[in-house]
Length: 435
Image (cartoon, rainbow, N blue to C red; front, side):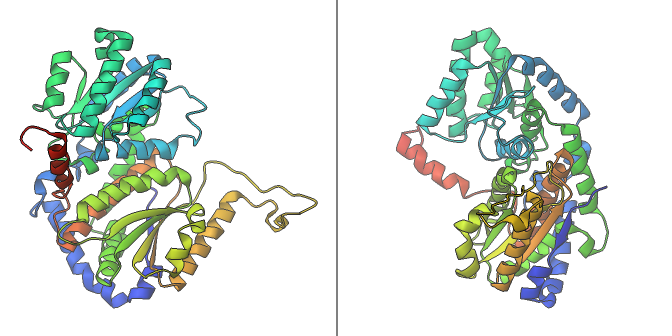
């Protein structure tokens, strides 16, 4: 079994081993709360055992729906916002070609709606849907969240105008509450195939439910391997191995130590453009779980080497507010080497024959050392490669570490009271009854 490897040496060197050792009992207590379910938010802990307890018939149903819809769909529209689409998008964009939209494969190309209220975005989307055959999944627990509800009304009308009501209904799948809510009611009335969002799994922890599994499978990726990776990570996270052999506990501990030492921002850093949406998913997971009661590291992200030419100056020499978590990948999926040039006008013949990965690795390690020397603590998290299995591992690892870290911080990691504040003002401004 491949392992997630975490290295905190370049963080401990800046805060001291004593502070790290001192927080371990708190982290172990937080893990016990998570496992026993005896702390705040315990009604949203279904994700902890989800990889082991997921009904296998769900995977079979998903595969059957993929077999039914994929042959007649060039595009698959995923309607959702926040956790209802970020997890799926993170996995799909990590695995697909950077140019997948230009070179269509055997499976539908996934596009997204419900995550924005931009009129220009929908105008451009419908221009595309006019030309291509497509199907839809709409993901919402209630069916009344403004952004996806507006998107679904728009897309449903377009689909019915294009194919007729009966064919449109056969091209729509709903992922929603098992018994109640506007989307559940619409699905029952229209006869849509429906999948359930478990009551005990919050949106940002839902990627290993049909919320994420259906779009990922529709894009052509192996959800069995994704779940296998998550199961293996779960075994490590829940095991009774020594503290420093459990990467989730180590990560939760060092984050809290650095936060208590004055760090306010955590940067997720990767050298792979394909992981940019992994960072977006991670930002929601940690920002929504820990950012409450005036507490929590603010999650942000940068990309090496791109952002070293923009944000790099601040990270190196700006105010010492941040820590970095570098996500490292040992083996690339491809090999590209620098060719020789006799004239050497660009002066880079010293790179002759070197792979871009080896150059990227040197840039990453050079950045790590420079930032550490500049007073930025750096944690590295390394996996062997990016595939369905390792993504499943990383999903569970970061989820489990998030729950432990939140309890160590002293907050309920599974609510999001602040999310409702903007909605009340928006509903008032829009004239919604009751606001």
